[in-house]
Image 1 (tube, one colour):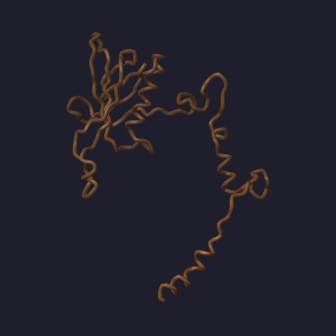
Image 2 (cartoon, rainbow, N blue to C red):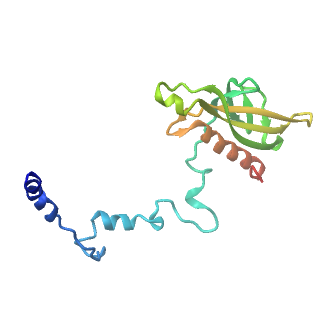
Image 3 (cartoon, rainbow, N blue to C red):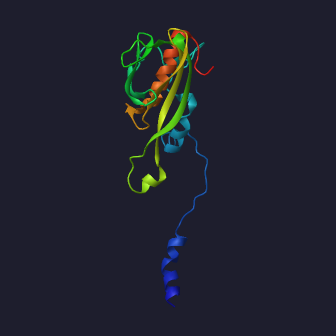
Length: 188
């Protein structure tokens, strides 16, 4: 009897649900024009705020008017991954203010991830991430005597420059530096 009363008390809740059928929406009408459904349809790839262009990539260009290059990065360098400053100065990639290399000395860049230290996470999360993977760049280049050498530049996985991870900004700047001065593209 209690169950019957319980069902009778809550039955109106289940019956009162009004399931509407779908209806066509005319986004050109003044009634629907400013609704979220119509605004979502407008924000497609054709209405981007990046300028279109003829014969080049226009608004997607990174180099040109208004572009500011990051000049230096805090990283770890060498076999023992010690703290260093990596900079792009006067068309050269250098470590700790040294002479550095020009981009025509650059042979190749390989991006890898390496576990160098245990995670600093505490408690339950430590179990799931036992290693903190650093983002490494192995840079193959020709020294001033023409010998092939390999350098290591590594970045912590959780450091930011503005709203971007520093290792991603470094890689973008490296590609721009390399291609501005030589005309070739890394990895090709």
